Image 1 (cartoon, helix red, strand yellow):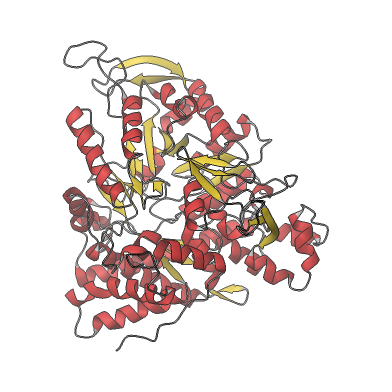
Image 2 (cartoon, rainbow, N blue to C red):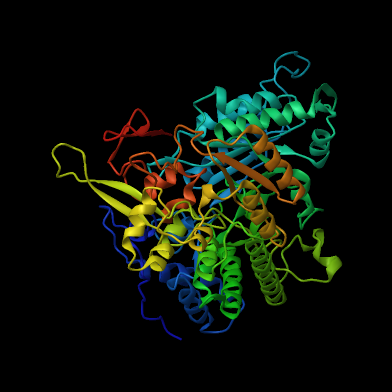
Length: 631
């Protein structure tokens, strides 16, 4: 088999911008030197190279063609980092997007990990840490009382150091810091981002156990324990701590919750260790020195009319697993411990989905319905079972992952090439590339107004107003163009009652439906789910607490909430009364974790008004409307 004829995928203007700014190779002067189709072939061929280890002559080109067919039709899209790096002689070779690194209770290991994190960030990766093993602030060190800095001070040190490493000379890398709810410094940690405005490059989450959540329900006291000697330092009402978490999340979106026992129940290698931290967006819980290798299936491109094309979806799942297992082989690892844990240890992969909301639109099912929950379960079960089957087939040919003996699979008599296979990522820029809805999130907005800035306007103001329309909604509306203007102004009178029920958007969906959809996908997926539970601005702290309890009881491994307008530097905000609204619906993926993604991926334009952004004092500022985001 020979190299295929390059097929250029049909890309929207936003998608072309993303490809040019993020994924396409450039020369020394910054000029683009490949097309999107050529880029996809570069990636497909590079990922097929390991096939020669197990196959015969011609196998590399054969598999590369299979990869390319799925990728050029945008049915399978790998993580953006891998799209830029794979086969790129000007890249670092690091294809993994994110990592978890260990934090132990000693100065030597704390700063070794910081050094490892710096290398990861230099190569454009993100990092997750659990700081719970560090002794509390004011504890003794070598019998010197009051000498310990505590986990919060070390998180600040990590934030300050890693913020100096700009990725692509544009933005800081992403991080997540986790502290378990029984740590004596947990209250200071919860307030961290409220009291320290300098920490812009860390999300924070509290690790909570079943025992803690039951203590909240039963209004019991909760022990705060020194990790150095396991002695109880003091007791606090569990509800008091729970309320504090909910109040801070209501105010700012941080902290999130990581349900440690729910996560551990899904640990497929329990005899290797405990899962106590995640990557920055939470879609994969990882062991120390593990990384995530990610790709996502666009479900909206797997339809036959108004039905799922199950055979085509199965084909994409199988190709996706093979693609990701090969990625582990060709990956470059920033430190030796990561290669040992990933390539020669667990071989964890993350095959996910995007376009779920667009599937619902096309087949006529409202997001906030039992039918949507049932479809989510059906899809997640089908995808996981076929992914696991493919991993087992690869194991028969290539061998089990090295830590298979420490896993749950020997008891099942099940060969597995990878310790886990499925997850759901936020799919920020890759959903823009595919012009599809993000992950399993609902569509953020059907129609938004966006003022466009023209440099030839000497008054330096925006000169044109554009309507940015969700592509599926636009196709559905057809010639009823007047409806688009009405919806942009918050007027849905041009839609029938059934249409309003179907084309529901993020803030029209009650929080419990967000949780139900997340739990439905989590039921069968073996890694985790990245999902934001969105609240309207009028939501209360009690609403947040109810959502936390519901997510825990339904088996979610974590929960992130965001109340509209609760952050000054919010990326996507929905306001019918404002003169300008959010970027297009295809940019909806970037809600909580990716304010910098929006600024750098789509254009150098203001998400509020479309004006030009200028860097000033470390912030991006719009001289047209005053919008500002720092970090």
